[in-house]
Length: 532
Image (cartoon, rainbow, N blue to C red; front, side, top):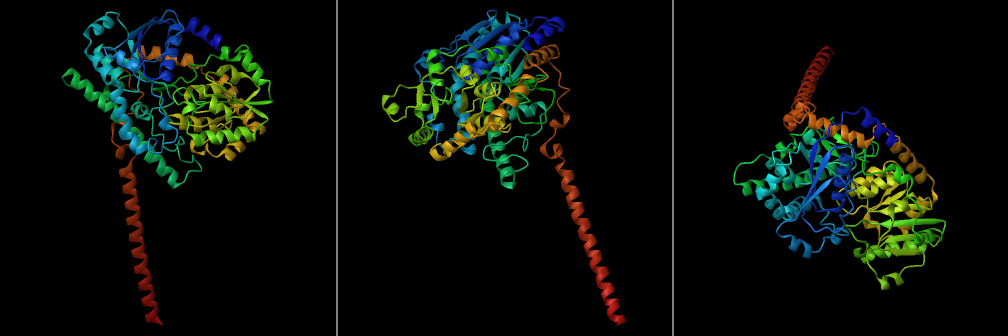
């Protein structure tokens, strides 16, 4: 189906090759991976793509992310790159069990300054490198594409005098979504710590408002810090980050409407979730390495455990590990493959024989194998997509960032369970949950139902990306699809003044009616008394 759609696109689509600059700041692997895949898709559809990569961290595993040989990659190493090479890659073990770091209020003040400081040196050099500006301008790009994790790429595109199309490698970014006319998502998505509709009560709704406010204010601080750095560096007034980002006719997000929560939106917010999935390859993953084939033959049921690349299993708190070990011991008829990034002979001695520790696992191939019954994961969007597109039941144990919403997003379809990381020490609860997911067929059935939906969705995500991208290039100043109501304040937007007026009017009317009824009652009572 994908091949057929691509053929039809090439045959009947209006493909006029454009010269496209994709700005891919190097600071996080999952972000770089998604943007590289987007570059491949755009180049595969006949456009000239240049991938510009300014380094904010010395990531080692970038080779091979870009598949299309026609893409030109420009790696920009700042003057302090040797300092970056000598710095340890952050793995953030504090996110495992720190309540403070995950507190929305503290995070909204701490994280913006930390992130802005990480980006500052490279960003400042980019703004001042006039030779680089001249070189890129000489290439006559038609448009730039940049991720909205920060505002620096949009300031850089402004210096190059290029229209810049915003995108985001996660499902949603509310501070940007709302710039493009998407209504408030309150109540439409389930937030960490809340029950979703229709079961949500007052405290759940209060938690939703509280978390949304501090999440949005935190990200706005990041943008504002970068706005101030740009102005200070240039020594003159500069456009605001909101004005630069909202000039685009579209905002591209890594959301899939058949996987995500159902949220009201506008035509300007384009959902391309699924472009990283190679459906043909996922159906034909090939044989497993021999060592894994032997492992899967040991018992009837196998469970894969992996918490991604940013948060490391070997840095898990001891009480969390103890809960997992109790589960391993309680389920001797189940084989466990645990992605554990460190050789640790002493820890291996604590584990029963049904557990295999591996520094690396062939995750897509394992997920495609029917002998693997459950995947225990942190719920990063890459893993979430792989779970959905392989129809595999999953125990989602979110650690930080967008992972809690990814877990709830997948769990609502019935094939996954969202599990609180602070319940990991409870080996008994963990055992019961895993056993239920292996034994109860509903999880596999629901996961398969979602898989069928995704494989048969009416609009191919890759074609959706390309059609909207080419539309945006053709009409770079189109803003007619952003509701004008977004230009007014909160009171006028939600008619709060009218609601207040009607409430006061109704109250006054009921009060006057009550007074009139009292007076009539008194007169009737007095008249009756005199008659008697």
